[in-house]
Image (cartoon, rainbow, N blue to C red; front, side, top):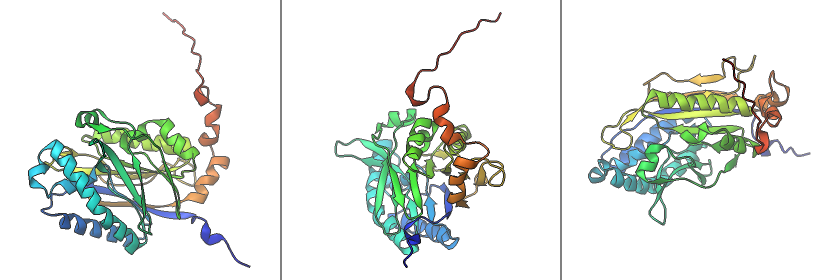
Length: 307
């Protein structure tokens, strides 16, 4: 008798979220060496899913000294660097048998416009991509275009969705990913001030609660004054779940320390998480459609004047 157990995702997954500084290297070899160290450290700690931040790929523009200080030129240089570094991420994913969400960055399209693109690499070395859908004011100023498609990624460790930074602040986007089967939502972020980081963190906690899922925030941190795009960065990495007695009293499985470079890791029991959706203290995911206004209907609001 044969078992099909190997075809199903494992119950427990160890996740690592990067609290990532942007360094200025003289060559892309410096970027390669840094990534090799980071991935090696996380894999040695047993991580199976590694998450790098939004706009971490701007680091790839630094070796082009003539371009790094000019916004438009640095977007092009980072895009070129992302294409080169695909083989590095692919090789590291294969070597360490891990899944890697590569640092997102500007990806130049055939029409010359850019999208903000994340790439998820499997242990086989293959990858698929998710473009950011909701543009922030600074991205609009840069000329970054919005993506048009949401995707979920079926992997050996579970079904994964990606909500890049500002995307996470829009409940219907993440809800669509979870309705399509995502148990893990990756939220790479890049915010200048702690206020921006806090907005994304609040969204990550809310999306985990609403959907009974895991959310993983990975931010850029520290100063990168050589870059006009990502010169100042604030954030704390975190791994979040619904708050539930016996599972997580706070909804925070792991969270970093401000300004401290490194990985933040936690092991998530996805089977337990899925069980909570139907038999937990509260059942936000299954009760979603019971709320007035679900499904696009208009909620009537009465106006009462009290003076």
